[in-house]
Image 1 (tube, rainbow, N blue to C red):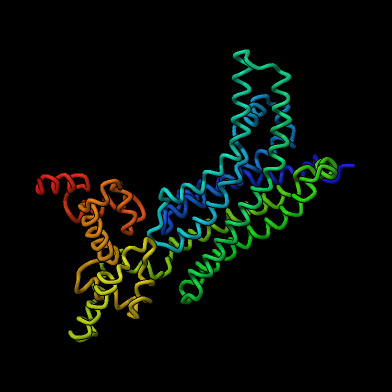
Image 2 (spheres, one colour):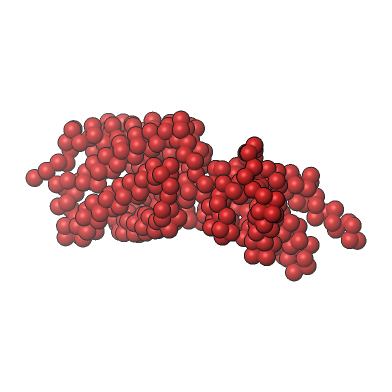
Length: 396
């Protein structure tokens, strides 16, 4: 006896979750918060969840039987992508807390397991091509279909594990990164905490469904009675909450951005009332240069103002004041100058001829090729390759 399977009420709930997810993912993508990359990571995450909800609605509402095109779309396109969700969650949390966060090559590698989700669709395309070219028989293709069903069933185990691990790692990162923040930063920390806790709750619900789902003796009974509703109803609720909550958070950030430590140094900020003696200023400048020249703190890709303040025991506002009013540089300009000098030095070392320019730049603290290219040209007036060519000609 079916308990909730085929219920129009639950189908409407899931449909509304999908529609809202698509709309809010667009609004979040176009949001004008403090970080476009953060917004786009979050928008992509919401979009993938909404896409999964729409897939179940198409199946359970009977639309795939009524509209043949939808059935073709379901078979050929990957409407359920779970493996990218974990990295998106983790990188979203990082992008909110790190002002210079970029999706560099190492981070993109985290999305390679998406192939687990794409593999069944690849088999469908191969099967279709084989039938059209008369290289495969229908009986063979049916056997592939059984394999795909079994594959998707048991691949839910690594999918669940991946998402759970990424959420837990992101939670640990958040606790370590923001252990104790000023009152003005509480809203950011609170939002990220709620964001991660919501996914942890969903993972608990998914686990309760996954255990009987992967058990051959209980799987058919579970699907006959409940289909996938025990997962997709909470997922639709998560999309509701995540969409509205994130959009409101971005609007609040836009209207009244909090004074985070990293944002202080994004542009020079002149202070007209000096409150330090010349000796104190000299000491501060010496301390800042010491951690750069001797300790090479600039090699840390995630270096930000708060980290520098902790390392030098100089208050953040004092660092900003000294940099902007006496060195006439922003925090990023100050750090990147040391990184560029390190890049220039390594480019001319014979032991590094086998390395790429971008590889050297990443080793010197830059976290993206675009940031490095822009900073290098602003500093030297030429591109890295032009600089290397000039130096080679002069040494010839």
